[in-house]
Image 1 (cartoon, rainbow, N blue to C red):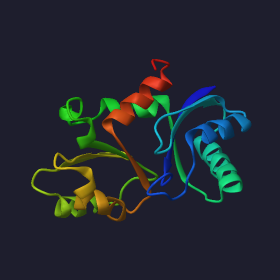
Image 2: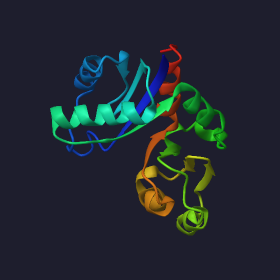
Image 3: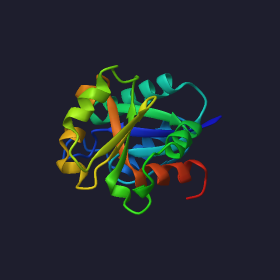
Image 4: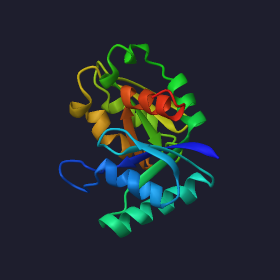
Length: 179
C-alpha cells in the first residue's frame, strides 16, 4: 500500500466548485481509501491505497462529479515523488518566504519551447526552474500579480496545479506521518 498526496485543481476558488474538506475526507473514506486527511480549503488530501495514480485519480474525480456535480482535475503523487520535488527546490529562500515559491506539478513534461516562453514573461525579480514534471517559480513580488504565473500553463502546454512551499512541505510531512 502506498501513501498518496492528492492535489485538486480549481476547487473552492472564488465560490466555485465548492467542496468542503470534511466532505472530501468522507468521500475518500467511502471509496475505501485508507486514513484520508485533508489540508486547507484549496483541495489537498493524503491517503493510503493500492492501485495506480491514473486509476485512483479517475475514481476520485468521478465520485466527486457524481456527488458534487463537477469533475476536478486531480494530480496524485506518491510520497517519494513529492519528497523528490521538495528536495530539488532550487530556491532556498522558500523557507523564509514560503508564499513566494510555488511548485507546479505538471500532467506531462513541458513543451520543448516552454523555457523560452516562460523567460519572455518573467519579471525582473522572478526566477523559475523546470525539473522533469515540476516547475518551480519564485515570485517575490507576489504570485497573484505574476504574469508568468497566470500564463504558465498555456506556455507549458500541459495541465498543471500549483502549491506554495508551505503547502508542499506540510503535505510531505503529513504523508510521512509527521503532522
